[in-house]
Image 1 (tube, rainbow, N blue to C red):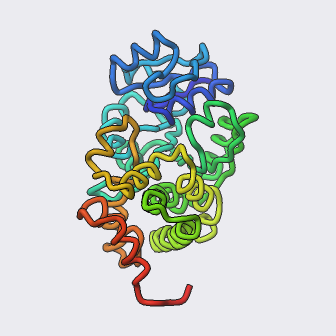
Image 2 (image 1 turned 90 degrees about the vertical axis):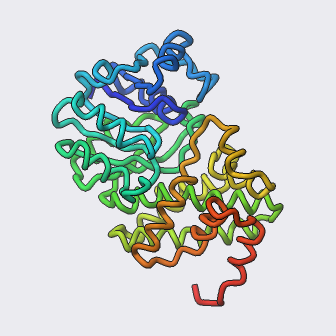
Length: 329
């Protein structure tokens, strides 16, 4: 693999471009906004989403899908979940035949309730698919700090090919055949992280956050298993690892949303004042609907849905979680 196209020039896409640059002769970073693409090209830095990290020379930035995708050996999708289907509909005709398409997007599509790999398979069914997840913050990846990531695919050869192509001295990749578990862990941990942020915003201590994270992992695991995932996947990097990072790390967008909600701010105000996408906000609605469809008990996700979409006071939501009937673990 000599040429990689990364669809999405936010902080995560830009960080992956920087981190993977040593492994490829060409790294093509595609931006939805032509003005943004021109600005990044001129400044050699994504000052909007990832300031302070200059782009290596082998990274090019473009708004043109044909230019970005032409001759690529692998495509890495890093656009927000709500835009993935639309971007792929436009990109699919330009993706070289048979090359792998890797999703680094963490979410569930609203409406269809499809995982990102399912969206890719629907729009670009002739391509091998893999998913990338794990406990990673964009700024730390761009800074070449050590991190461990999971690459999941039902095709072990594809997983191992991506593993070899993407691994660097700072990024250690593990393979997994459990695509469902990897994707559900990646998506639902963002919702639980909002809840952890709510606890912090309310002034609650470490006991409360630890309880919420632990019981949140149980909800994530139940959801993955009912959809065909494996329980052990959720005890690894794509489950517990990513959940702990996102629920407790100061760089977590989703935790920050919950923190501000716990402090009394309203969701529209919180979202209006950030340029970053907090995937947990939209994923919460999709996860709640998945729970109803499959009759999975998701009390924390349900309460976060009430806080985000039904104007429930965060303190009352936490109290109602504690007042639920007693049960066994």
